[in-house]
Length: 105
Image 1 (tube, rainbow, N blue to C red):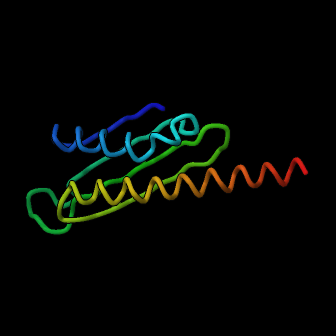
Image 2: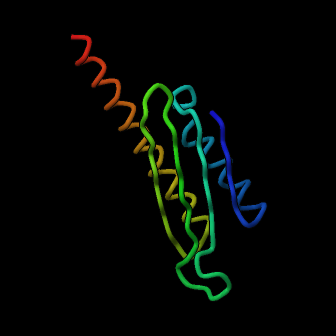
């Protein structure tokens, strides 16, 4: 699994790497690449503007999973995005393997 993380600060980068490695560790062989971008949408103006956008390319399929989460706190946005990504990747892998089973039958 190739992981790319783009964030404005080191602590957010470290947090995102640790959180996504843990969340997707059971799918490591099924995930081709993971790109995480944490941005401040409004800049220094404040508000609910920390965006965490996740793009996952799955191995063996042409499926791409995209998750987008926004919160006032970057850590909260990263945590929620990691949880949602793990659930969505699990469903996508299950759907792909179920489809293959139907094709073989």
